[in-house]
Each structure stands twice: as C-alpha cells, then as structure tokens.
Length: 358
Image (cartoon, rainbow, N blue to C red; front, side, top):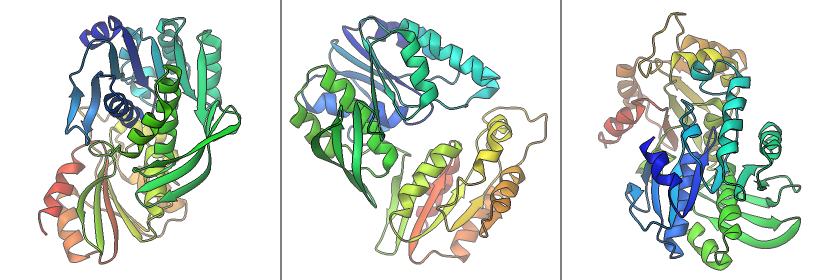
C-alpha cells in the first residue's frame, strides 16, 4: 500500500505487471530510462545486474515499479502507464478461478489513468480482450505482424538475440539484445512501446537495450568454463520453465535441469501443464516441493509432476531429496553441458553450495 501510494503520486508512473516477465521487464525499463538520462526512481522484485541492487533512487518525475498480482495488491495502483506482460491462470490458491483473476485485472485497468497507455502482449487474446474492453488507450507488442510493435526474423543465440523491429507493419530497425530467449525479446518490445510513446530518442533506447544484462536468478551464471555452464533461475510456472529451457536448448549442449516445484497449490492446479515443460532438457532431476508456508491437505507430492513428465515420453527423469542433489551431481559430473538449478524456493542455495565445490 505504501509503494502504491508513492507511485500514484509520481509525475509519471509506470507499473509493470502480468503472470511472467514482470521482473525482467521492469528492470529493463529501469535501466534504459536511467541510461537515457530520465533519472527514474525504480523498485523491482529482484536485483538488477546493471545496478547490483533492486532499487534505483532517482528523481521524482519518473517512477517504475514491478507490481505483484499474486494477492490482488496490484489493485492498489493507479499508474499513468502500465505494461501487462501476459495473463495466465496462476495464483489460483488466492483467486480460486480464472474468472476471478480476470475480474481483478479489470479493476486494475480501471485504475490506469485515462488518457494514459496500457502496453500489452498482443499474442495473448484473453488479455487483449480485457485491455480493449477497459477503454484505456493501448498499444500491443508481440510476435504477430498484427501487433503495433512486433519482432520478426528472429535469430536466437546462446546468450543473446537479434530481431527486426516492425512498427505498425513497417520495418523500423534491427535490434540486438545481450539477454537470451524469445521471452526477453517480448520484454524489450514492451519497454520500447512505452518509451517511444513517451517521446524518448530511439537510438538512445536501442543502445541501452543492448547493454542490459538482466536480473539475479534469471538465467544467472553461477559458474562458467569451456566445458560446463551452471545457471540459477527463478522459473517455477510451466510456461517459465519451458521458456528458459527453450533458450538453453539454443546453446547446443546437453542440458540438465534440477527443478524444485513451488507451492502445493500450484502443482495441484498446473500439474498437467508440466508434462511438456521439460521437453528441451536432456535430463530432469526433480526434488521435493517448496511449500512457501502452505499446508498440504491433499497430500500433493513431486511424484505428481514426475508422472506427467514421464507419461509425456521423457526418458531421463529422476527424483532426489534435496540433500542428495550435490552428492549425485558430484558422482555424475556433466563434462560438457549446461546445468540449471530452477525454482522459486531455496534451490538457489543448492546452486551456490554446488559451485563452491569447484
């Protein structure tokens, strides 16, 4: 409530929300605004690698905040501008149904200033319907040529990407990013759509985007040698898991993922969506669910995900207790590949402990 009050009294406020990508998008927006001289004040949900902090203490004119939707607290905010990265069934332990989640975002959209601007993922039809129905000025970004800002001719590299930017169907320029994956291209399109609307210099934005390094626990490199790359990543929703592993698949090496599911309720509601989330991993190691303080009245366990992944045809899946992970990894070293520790719980501690073995 305090953060919403501060944002709501800013001269120009930008709220970034959505199911996935809001941390990286708000970090990207914060960094670019800082680099192009806007002197923003920014509050982001993870440490930004360009700043080594999750906060930028700038001036009063531009405020950027990552706005969490997990408990409906996004409804406290009344920003001038908003980015909604996407919308999927998530946090159903709080909302109970997709309809309640949609209704919550209708209330949020009603709070956005009019005139203002809502930038949204144009490839998400349900989100598009919500935004258009709100009556707020809006702009779409995404991979469809029908989007106002679209990415075409995409070239994904192991830890970077390149694409042609099209504005309203016309070629604008070729953009380079130093962060990998289609999901980061979408984040860059979202950032561009707001900053170009605000009238900032296009070439300055382009240069800053290329220098953005990402955020902590988003494909964060923990160890690197010519043979082995060890990463730590926050992905915990099936869509996020799939996006990260698809990006890592571009490296062209063996991919081993150690995944810690997050919340019994999420596993219960989204269990079937995990079936193909690990398709781009050569080997999957699952460990016990991180409860995040939840009770488990239905007796949900990690085997629920294991059964779905194996049932979908993946042949290299195992379950290990948390204390068994490091001994297993040391006994079965990955000599030429990528290893990613993944989840929103305390799996990052295991990643740190593992790399200290080197």
